[in-house]
Image (tube, rainbow, N blue to C red; front, side, top):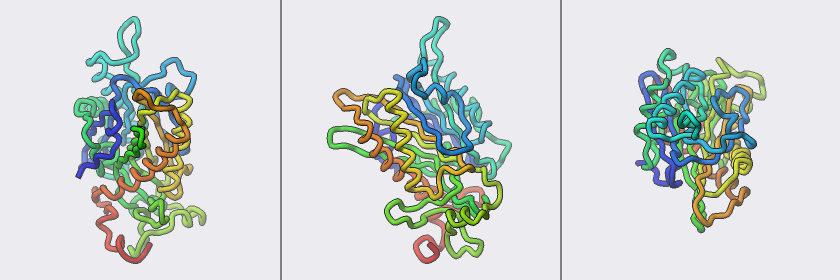
Amino acid sequence: MPNPESLTAVPGVLVGHRSDPVAATGCTVILCAGGAVAGIDVRGAAPGSRETDLLRPGSLVERVHAVVLSGGSAFGLDAAGGVMRWLEEQGIGFPTPAGVVPIVPAVVLYDLQLGRADVRPDADWGYAAAQVATAEPVQEGCVGAGTGCSVGKVLGAQRATKSGLGSACERGADGLLVGALVATNALGNVVDPASGRIIAGARRPDDSGFADAEAILKAGRVGGFGGANTTLALVATNAPLSGAQATRVAQMAHDGLARAIRPAHTMYDGDTAIVLSLPAPGLPADVSRVGAMAVQALAAAIVRSVAQATGLAGLPAAAELPFVAGAGW
């Protein structure tokens, strides 16, 4: 059942997906056609991105019109071109003497180890995702950029657990909204932020339970291609933030990753958080409050990204494992 408390609870935000479950890849487009002030913070050491320098404070262009989250590794950056084409057709973009130029930052994750490595999101996929973007509750699970996601690859991709895309929203009594959307594709395990219990991740070779990813990393026993990761997070709020303030919120939002993914921000991950501000009248620009709510929303979205996932391309989801409700944690 769609979750009404998702990113699209923030007015002005539309989300669309293009998914290929056979190839196990896809892309997600977040539209803010009226423009949004944006900020970014990259904590992982293996990011893939396009136009993200524009999100840093001090840039000439202060507003973006869409953001693309995509699978396909660096190949998936092509999806942003299709979103630009769709926005240009609608007359949306940064005004220049020769016409509008849509501002569409894109970030990608590595999902080539599942499904078909020769099928990647491209400009046509981005265009299609923009066409179907809606303010309805965000579809979660193995859709869009979450189609080929997995977690717990510390023992190699074959011992991982299927994850996907999740979303959540925090609400303040005065109408403040902070929504989060995440495609969780991590070297580490996903844990319950309250108890620290592993809820999805590296499966032990004897299938008796989940393995301790932090202990494996500490022992220097990372298996397989450790670089096949990256968690992509997007936060949107109706608080009126400047570019510098949105960047500060993005920095704080990474605490949500660290609460729910262990370990996070490794040399094998490209963890990236983007923040969009679509202000509502009368709300204060309380950066600390927005940041704290972003942490909570992002941690909740990560939990949902594994809870809503289903098995794909031979990789089981947590809900399908026999030990999820029993021993082996």
